[in-house]
Image (cartoon, rainbow, N blue to C red; front, top):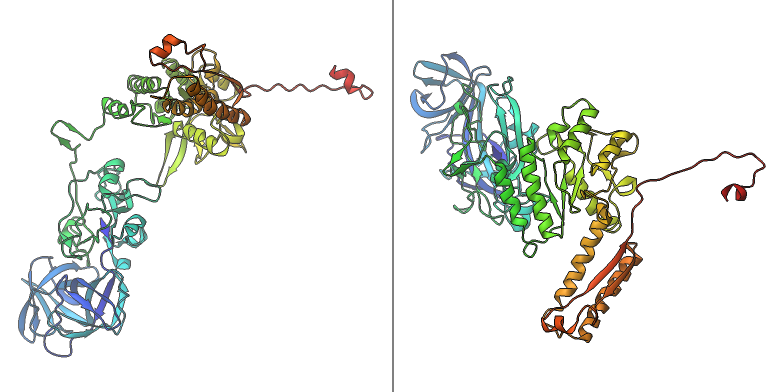
Length: 611
């Protein structure tokens, strides 16, 4: 896990005299150019030779300066490249580290090579600060002015594994668009889940999951409106890890007010790894791995996290309970309910879909979109078997004009997890209904080559031929078909109504849902008004113009609104009742086309043939 971290690695020269530099973490630094920031860490990278033994990070070490042994801390040791990273103790050291001096750790020794010293100040810029630059002068803890020799971008050198750099995974985390708009700063993080020892995939170092640009802000949203809080993203999308708690070992950039999990107005603190490179991966000693902005977690022997009374495993009753929040039409206004995947087996799928069917039949103001079980299509090589599976599955489901069945599982690229996967098409069918409302009217059919093109699909798990489509259609299932050169198309507009009626078509059901919602709103306005002829006339003056408009937009061919003394007799008025009857003739869609081609002799008159 990493975040914005340091902006710069400022390389500074050796002091001319006195003692070596001391820069304490969180110390403020600034330059006359206007650049300002804080020290994330200060370390000295040594190139060494004449090595005896092997240095161990974290073990007491001394460096001989003019015959005097000065205590330092070994941060990392790279034996292959002869690199030794050390950190200064609190209070610094006496004297100056120089070429040719000897480093000692017990019986282990090494000699600093010629031109083998690089002093690195890792700097986090203040919000709004310009970059530090070579020749800028900064002041160390001992108030000594130090000129910067060169400046490098720290993220370009940051590693998540030995020789594996973050910059090759994604650009540097910064501030998300959402948090920037709230006035916050540095909320983004990248998280990688890696099979470090190959026990999961068989290949050590395999990247299992990546979550790029997730946020520390609890209210963060992505560019498409989804939650982007890293806690929620991991819980919803990771198949390997759970979130436990926020890190507390942070680099304080804003006087203790930048804790993870606050809202988007926060200037967030940064990660500052206190763990050594022994945590990443086992046995590695990588220069730059300690005190940087990457946290390493070694996990093994994992099990589902269980808490008192339950766990993160979502059961079928949990799903049904969640959907039950939509039961009340007065508190929740919705148009479509999606089943998502139908379930692993018939029992689970039927339980889920039946519960959702009960919701839409009770509400009577929305529609349910249902796709088949994955196992009925994906991985089944025979199209005939797939057809039989679909019909057998959907035959068990209830009849309702508020439900739509489809035959589709589409193959897509999941950009969030960098994998290809099959997903059910019920979300696409609902999306086509919404698109039809946008480009035409809700009472137009969402099927066909004009409005029924399914997007973002590479292929289908099942594309029925004509005879199979006929079987599906008679079984209330709308085929989703891939036509060469024409795309993937919804090729049916039936509801799940089990018998022939006006409501066995999607466009008719959606017509009634639309006009019922509008006219119901007009009816509510009549509550507690005077129940007389004048009020009935006002209601007619609202409803009839609306239905004439629907008729003009090809929704109905004719209509009648009856709201007078004949259906509001005196006894009904005395009971406080208001009755209106609305009759409509819905426009039907074309489901079958017959074309007859006739060859005639040259001298035949077409008027005679046509008659």
